Length: 219
Length: 219
DNA sequence: GTAATAAGTTAGAGTATTCTAACAAATTTG
DNA sequence: CAAATTTGTTAGAATACTCTAACTTATTAC
Image (tube, rainbow over all chains, first blue to last red; front, top):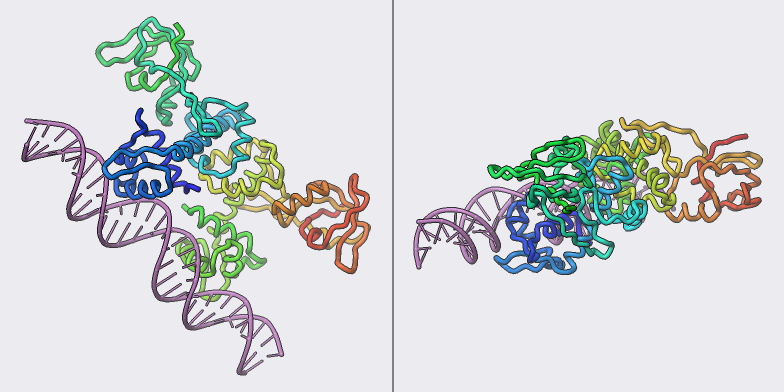
């Protein structure tokens, strides 16, 4: 059974994987806020446990077992976030830190019960998919708001960043998942977008913000 | 901040303390399922952190800080047990293992919210008192059923042991907190008690069982 | 295509937690 | 009270995870 530390490495590897499923050691070290030698030695031990394929100077790749393990931890994290929001009344900006700890609990019944109480949700409060209990993830094909064109109407469906600061920013603008947005114009200068929605006839979103908002195009 | 390991030592010291607040090293080691030298070295480090008073060959005593720290961990444990039973539908025999892990989570808001949702309970599902958020414990003066006399009517109010096996035994006899019991007789031979309650006109409880059932005498 | 830079590795060490073996102090028992 | 037993201690070592310093390999940039 993986230690909490190992679980954090698996999760980071999963989240940092590029389209080829590869992660560089320095990205991993940076993501986990540890030194390069620490990550290096830990990766060797993860390899011994069969969770990572590793060859000197090559990018890291999770094995199938490593991917499943990681997905199941992420499942616990996202179920917990959903539970905290839907059943305990927390704001979406408050739940990450708590879930970061709860995800390491080994108690299948506990998470099963959350799942039942939530009606087997498929996405978490930030729109990210919740892996099923076999570690399989349903992929959605959302596009970043930053790629949308003036005139389009879209629905906010997920985020690619869920930091407290970002979520608080969205709260301050009353932007929630499900909100319908009309793309009014784009500033060629800084690529910011002007949008309207609900009681906000005109709101400017910087490129940094709009590329982190995933949307479904309605028309 | 105490590590999970340290927290477990503090909790064990708290729970094992006799009326003088003392614990022997061997009891501690036994309670935590570690070797005597392990407990010994850990206790030295707890002393350095100011949580335990320790002198060679003398019994261990928690400092005021250690007591408070321990009580706050026990608070988290018992709140969690109550939450699992009342809000998530678990049986009282299922919650200890989960709470054993949840108690180490550092997230005041999480436990505050549980407390609120539960209406600020003062006892856990096994009748044990829940320390307040300052680590103060309300003491109750219940007596063990084993000390009761034939003819008395009592109400089951708490348990001094909450092992899964014991709780499952109680479930099998439909004995729950709040149940009113009539003490019918005591066998001089093995000190077992014969009692009646609800749909059980006659049930024999061994001394081992009856001394673990705390009751309030009604008449 | 070499020089500079970035990325990765090795060596050596520190802290936390655990163990076994060997010994010492305290307590119990006849 | 001396012997036997229990309890507690020290020494030395192992594992997990972390670090800094020094070095090597790979990549990038002229």
